Amino acid sequence: CSFAQGKIEVVGPSTIDFGNYAAKEKKIATYKIRNVGKDNLRIINVRKTCGCASATCNKKELKPKEEAEIEVVILEDSIFGKYSKKTYVESSDPGNKFNELTVSGNAIPLVAITPSDSVFAGRIPLNTLWERSFTLNSTNRGIVLGNPSLSNCSYAVETKLEKTEVPEGSSYCLNVKLPATSLSGDLNCTVIVPILHPTNAVPLKISISGKIGTEFVAIPDTVYLALSDQPMTKSFVLRLLGSTPQSLDIKNIVFPKQEGVTFILPVKNEGNTIRISATFSPEFIKQVYADETIPLSISIPGASSAIITCKIGK
Image (cartoon, rainbow, N blue to C red; front, side, top):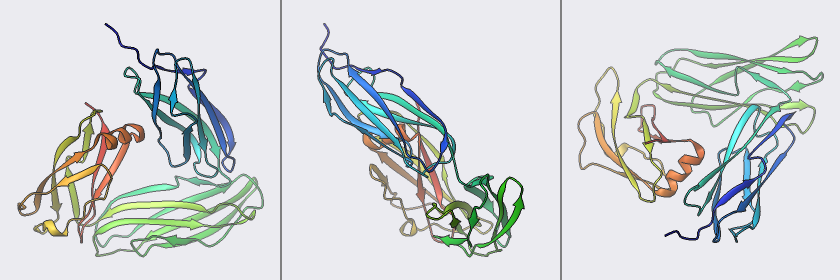
């Protein structure tokens, strides 16, 4: 026998391409969905995969043959360069619980940052200088940048901005330097470069991250979760690495306060190693499905953080 049930269907294209446009513009993509089943269809959630966007549905439940609109908004100055972002419509359709919508485009910034506006410095040994240069190019004449400032820097990072005249526009060179340090930990810093002209332009932001000195690691560092209506538990080993063996104290470990994730601690540790478990709720696993990856950072004083990357897999 068969049961009456709601069934979701996308009316028209499920992919919308904005093409080339100025990043300062807000772009809106509108999709239509229809219930082609024989019973009501519930829209449980609309999950965006990027902080650059908002996503909404104008109805929570659709009767048979009824339609609804999904609106995905790419916010102004929130993403730069070529992109392709997905939105997942979670519904009560048992055969298609997560319907995929895609929006793409090329958001052209006022000033292009080379090599990137986000750089991972990798593992930096203690007492070692690290530096990186960035090219800030504009195809418009008259662009004027101001002196850089730092935000949320975990180390004493130094910056220097120099202008270079080019025929087709404005070009600057930004040098970022981390002096040699004897302190282990996480390197996190945002360099902010104001745009003085044109006025009211959004400042440039360059994010720099890395690991310095003694390492705190998770084994495995990637956990694969399966979509399920039941919680899932995984086991890990946390280990402190370094030239001088050190013992871990469970009381010093700081676990992330991530909704839907519960860490189960052991009664005692084994020298520089601790075995733990983590339970992941169905709602958290659904969010991993939408975001593709969610990192969890576990820290301890005097070492760089251990990162567990959550992904969907078998």
